[in-house]
Length: 178
Image 1 (spheres, rainbow, N blue to C red):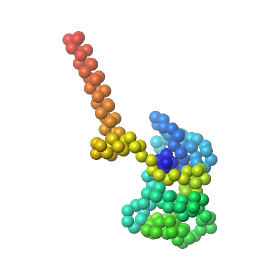
Image 2: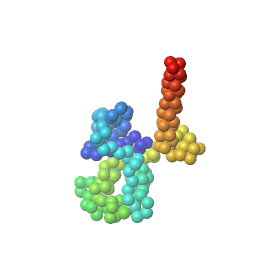
Image 3: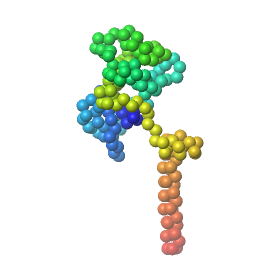
């Protein structure tokens, strides 16, 4: 579900991907429901691609959101961000993710996590799983290729096949004339 939820640098809140155009994406704000185009100049990232630093390996945001959802019992976060001190934020976050890296995760990161969580819960998005297209995954596993690489291979194969067909037609036409 989180693959279609986007964060846009310089714009508050989260956005849902609605459509793709040639040079833009159409997104809808999860806060107020307004739709707008975004372009290549906008820095856009899928929430599914975000992770947080821990003392071990980085933890994907979807796992942290699931833990937070269980901790808050499906409700909005009860921590008041306007009154919370940095120590309050760190103590609260240590309950959610005990092994987070205290040197690289800043209080502003924790505030953003809480804001995003509240936006998602208000929008009724409580499935924090990362979707994978099962067809691409199964086919890629049979070919021992990653799903993104598989799509790239298929695209290049289609181009090569098309070029080969076009080239053979030109050869036949040239042979008839000559």
